[in-house]
Length: 386
Ligand code: NIG
Ligand code: FE
Image 1 (cartoon, rainbow, N blue to C red):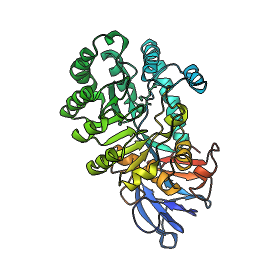
Image 2 (tube, rainbow, N blue to C red):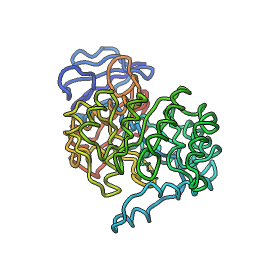
Image 3 (cartoon, rainbow, N blue to C red):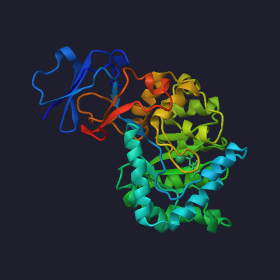
Image 4 (cartoon, protein in one colour):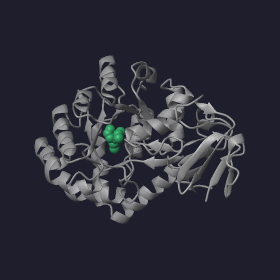
């Protein structure tokens, strides 16, 4: 069955051809894949089904390459304390670890399922989920097993923070991660990640862990330069990471190194918002030639949001992206941060993951902050929201 999407206000294809915003364009898909894109006047005559976009904008589904959806409890009191002057510290993660270990599988699964519903309503069609609130073999594996029920993009983040029981001997925890925990996590993971920052893991520990993961066949990504620059970017370059995430504090030479290594910079404006930190200036990243992705980092500590639309609005208003740059970062940038070549672009052969807005242009995603602009989300050609 061939479906034609027509009467599109502006179409974002991310295919690199023509203007970024295409007017008068339509496309068709069948069996979950795009098969034709072009001027509506050239559309194929025989289509079985028509989606009338009613003059609204259509764009690729958002790709959220960084989230932590397997957890229990919340940290609203910690957020309120920050808004009263406290600063964010990595140690807060341990309170979510305690709540997560105490939760049943059913509780973790149902919390994750409702956040995934929010992702879909926010236009997110592909998303990554990390472990990292278990921090022992059983609970890290359990987190990844549940995460894998929702997405193939699962990330082993046993190196989120040193758990309390290893406070006196952090290197013994690094040994555990690189040995038994990694072996048990492997069947459920595509990625390995480390939180390399003040109060979490130092660059030597990060290097050991990422190397062990890479040797076992996992793709490498890294949390770095959120709280301070302590050398994580050098490690990411050595280990050929696909993406480095956060980058709140990044020097010019670190940006040049990221550009030279072809590593995607994943910016997470929900974190600066929720920790009341200064936002990185995205113009510096673009000027240095770094590819940029935007992600929610949905987690209960530093960014409890599932709204990619809010990330776009913050990236535009606070990080100085223009709207086209922010949309590209939230779609194709995210696809590259996940090393995916089948999503993020509307062109023949790509997955038919797309969003129909309730507005005529993508500007409305930043221009109407706090007001949902997603009318319909389609995943492999199937409507997730109606
Ligand atoms: O990406 N920075 C490290 N990890 C998460 C925060 C986790 C938490 O505070 O619970 C992040 O921001
Ligand atoms: Fe994170």
